[in-house]
Length: 258
Image (cartoon, rainbow, N blue to C red; front, side, top):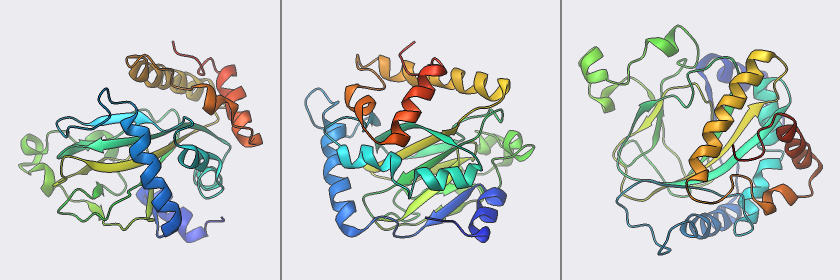
C-alpha cells in the first residue's frame, strides 16, 4: 500500500491520517472474535466487569490474525512511509475502555518518532466515545502549550476542547503520531479499541536512549501481570520482517523484561 503525497502531507502537518475501510467486513469479524478472546484471557474470571479500563496485549496464539497485522503491508509499510524510515513493531494490544478518556499525548519526548494505529470493532460517534485529536499538537511549541486541565487553563470542559472527532465504522483506521493530544468522551463501560504501535528504528543516541526509556515503561506495565511483554508466540512468528524486529529489539536491550 503506497500513500499519496497528499496523505503524507496531511499526516506531517496535522499529526494523523484516516484510512477508511482498510479492513474488510470478514477481517473485522475475525478481529472482533480474537479481540474478545484475547482480552478476556487476561481477566481472572474471564469476563470484563465494566468498572475499570482493561488493557492486554494481543500478541499471543489466541489472537493470531490480530498479531499478524503487525507485519501486514497495510500497517508496517504504511508506518515506514509515515516516519520516512525503517520501523520496529512494538506492540499489538487492546483495551476495554470505560467512560471518558481525558486529553493526553502518549509521549512528551520528541527525541524519537512513533505512530499508533487504532482499530474500533464497533461503530463510534462523537457522542459514544469516538476518538478525538487536536490537529497539529504533535509538534512543539503546540505540544507543550496544551494543558491536561482545560477547565483551569481555558475555562473549557474537557469535551469542549477544539478538536477533530474520528467517527468510524468497523474497518476504518486512524493512525497518529504518538505525541498528538487525543481523548474520547461519552463512551460506555466496554468500548473496544485495538492498537498497533511502531517506533522508528533509532539511528541517533538521543532516539536510542528515548526508546530504551519508553520500553522500560512498556515492560514494567505488563510485568505486573506476571506475563512477559513478548511471549513465545510473538517471538516465533516466522515472517522475515518480524524476525528483524525481534533481533533489533534484542540489540537495543529492549526485548526482555527489565
